[in-house]
Image (cartoon, rainbow, N blue to C red; front, side):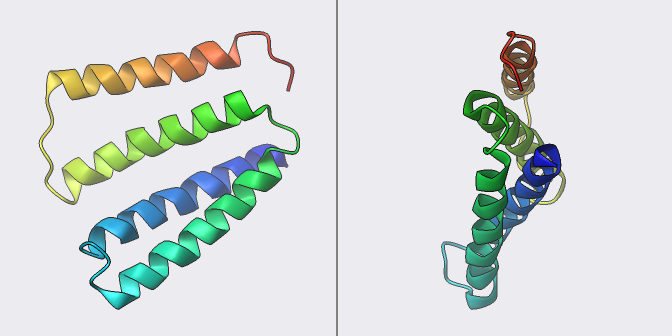
Length: 107
């Protein structure tokens, strides 16, 4: 169940970060409320996932998934620039997460 909690935390972190971008520096009230609500849910589920998943693994997966998907959202929705260095850097983050998962840490 802890992996489901981590997945839910990631989904709400993505929603929170997207709301934060839409809030335009916390100047739009509805996205500001969305940011705080989604991050509250995110951190609640993340904390629940940490009962069983080692923090080094959980945080690596949480942050790598966030960086990867938010980068895609930024490119597709917010029309942010993409370049080879950005892509390669994200791939290194993903490879690091894979390495942590194979590092022999018991789950």
